[in-house]
Image 1 (cartoon, one colour):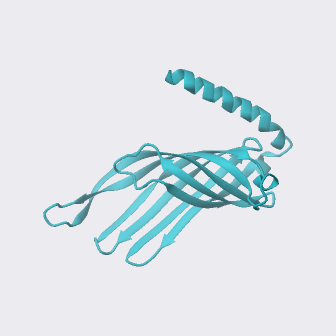
Image 2 (tube, helix red, strand yellow):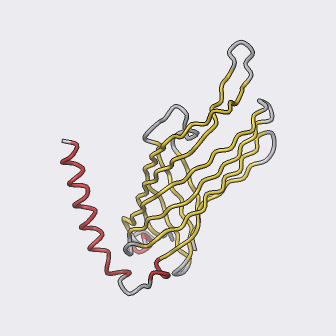
Image 3 (cartoon, rainbow, N blue to C red):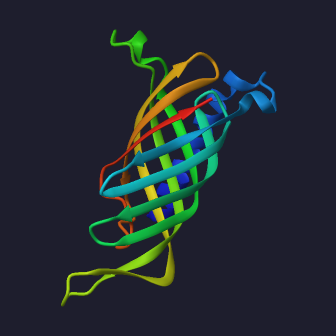
Length: 189
């Protein structure tokens, strides 16, 4: 049953790719490339710095794919913890409805589906149940997070725009730093 669903999904994806391929057939390789990503900053008792740039490619007028590194630094002053997370991600985004403003007069751009796979390396953090203190170890762990969801894309011209995605971590690894839903605000140019 699982293989039958996978085959049907692949056939539908290939049909959508071929139908939307006409939008970008006259674009050069360079015109199909885009850059962007997301970042996060928070300072105070807890410090959080997230740098996640991406390089993407417009496969069709509706389908994009890309890759990028991930680096996250976190410091929790109250617990005395400093930790770094690093790794990479790959994503695939598909525009379901282009220019939703033509259907509903609310000034929004495109509605998209988004799938993202992160492979990140984290420090294991343990809590001593007797003292309540948290400790990091020298041992690091690679984890894989699959994020699925959708959102809005607001283009500003032909080359740049902003994405807002609401994603769910469907792997729910016990070491994952994500709690559902995961909200991502990113940009591209």
